[in-house]
Image 1: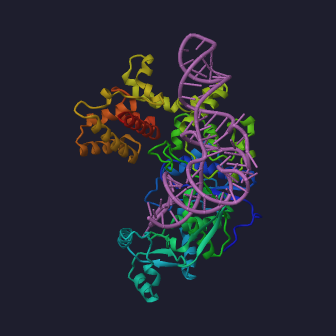
Image 2: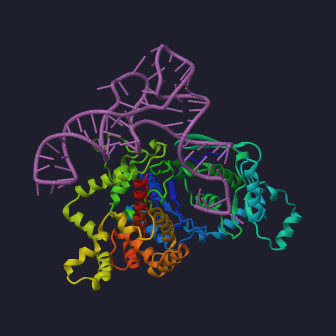
Image 3: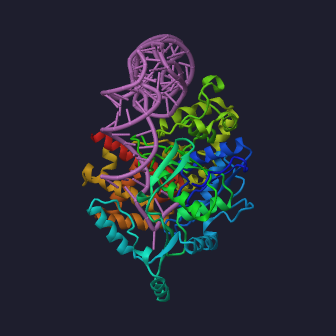
Length: 489
RNA sequence: GGCGCUAUCGUCUAGGGGUUAGGACGUGAGAUUCUCAAUCUUAAAACACGGGUUCGAUUCCCGUUAGCGCUACCA
């Protein structure tokens, strides 16, 4: 087995978010741990954008990730926007590099071209599942002769490149938090390294980049443990030293499942817009899994990022997945709000829920709808509320049942999730959905209006939603659905 | 199903072979207060189960159970 990296190299860590949507609270958590680890050791903290899946790529996502991490105060030393000696830091700009390195693997026999079609793979999988076998790539293309390969290439068949995992033996690596972990090779699949579109998969890109960027410590979430043997095998196939691996516990929903937007606000945009202070969010994240000595600040649970850098011990993080408890976060945030000066409190208000931009956008919606300025609040209360609760009479259309309405609202939420956040995008999406369900535009929009504003009267709905923000709107709809579900139980 | 990880109050955690198992959030009660928060006092609340090892296990080992993750040409 290759030795894991010696401690003499200058510490370099990274976070590698994918720009597939809103910046995620899990990214902030892993980012925090990486940041602390690097700062404690005078190391470098790298931000790398893993945008190799163009089917899930969201163009606005990258900037939102930058903004959210900056908001939290987790600054990086190298990244797509700040540059650095090991760039580019966007994987989509490194295609040539991956191709060059994967060719080496094909040349040294640790990877091979696979011409299997998606349909065939799907069939194989189904057959294996039916036979209660673990779904694994059967290795069909491992044994292609050179003539067959040349032939396939000549006729322009699309192909992927897979790693050749040894049939026998096992791979053992050290997780710095859990100790030694072993996987039998018979349980490790011949992972695709290069997709047929020429983009690498996570596994290839990650290993190549971590090596090329001199990453010494891979600190990532627990969900990667099962793929780590593949990564170790890749390092070995290249003849490279291993980094240290640290797998952090996965943040959980109240029901203990992996944290998800279905059950918890996970967008950092939401936390910002709903008025959480970055220090409180960071502090709360630092509480997850322990890591901070119990006797800091007289045993209080309140501490700053600087204090975390000073005292936090990554090695002491507990590996049981902590529930991300919004109730406690709110309490903590309240503590922070109470502890700052009135001036700071007021400016926090003015930079978020009472920002000029927000207020002006709202003003635009109501200018023609009020007679005196004093009526401003009457029409706009829902913009400033944490939540609203429409009564049954308000949200259930006259000719519909509660069940029907809630079912409609549930699917409507999915439509909102999938839509770009502009009136021009929302309107056709919502109308199309309403038509399919044979709900009138009036019923359709009034329901949404009731859920988001709590009443039957409001400025134009879609414009209001856009001003209110996607993250907060979705959260409000989800909370509404949750509360109705609970009531009906 | 297979593989892997995990297991202290409802939640976040401290602790560790002998403890009244500590703190925080939340919850209940009380005090204070014009109301509501805040604040203070106080109460209830946990070592998943079964075997070992040991004079003694919540703590160490094994197993069971449960939860979670992975099982994609997603990350």
